[in-house]
Image (cartoon, rainbow, N blue to C red; front, side, top):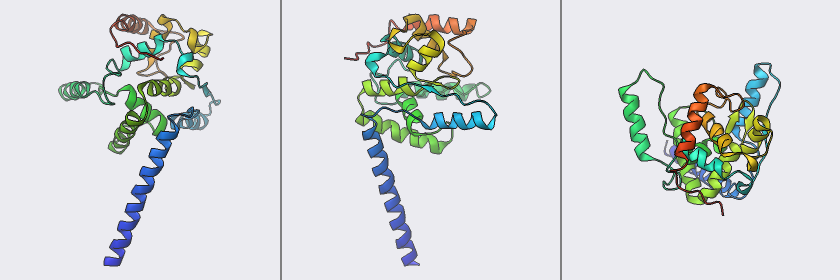
Amino acid sequence: MSFVWKKLRAIIRWTVVAFLGSTILAVVALRFLPVYFTPLMFIRCYEQMTEGKSLKMKHHWVSLNKISPSLPMAVMASEDAKFLRHHGFDYQAIEQAAERNRKHPEKRKLGASTISQQTAKNVFLWPGRSWVRKGFEVYFTALIELMWPKERIMEVYLNSIEMGDGIYGADAVAEEHFGTDALNLTKAQCALIAATLPNPRKFSSRNPSAYMLKRQARIMREMKFVDKFNKD
């Protein structure tokens, strides 16, 4: 019995070592390498095939200096106003979301994911709300905050996030919805893109509803108050 236990402990130990080593290596590598594909892209392609739809995956990697400076401001105003000040987690927002969800359990659950958390989820994980996935999200968020500068987190976020049905990243949505490239997106277009991010397959920046236009206007007002994002 002791031999089996020793063997089991050795397997667990080496599994943990292999996991830590491989994930840290991946995070270090992706600090410098473009992220051309994410797990979500493959999941969406699989969903399209199983539903009998034609495959659609629009994605062009571009560096941060080729993205309109208004887009980081817009997504911070919409998703994470404290992005430049926190270390991956907005504890005040988490407390507020937990309190609101406790008081109003009948309503849709309010999240408090930061841009760093969303980047970790998009690049390394899969969609879902399980505690296991959330635990991995916390782990990868801590790693990228430790190893990537904020500029890199924003660059990867703006290139990997889903921005429409089969559309991923700033350059692809600029081309598909506005007939331009990411660098030449206007402030209003950036705010409209940011307005879709809670559910980019439901809300369209190409054909915005009155609700989306209202969100766009609010984001444009709040862009004046977020911390200045310096790409240089």
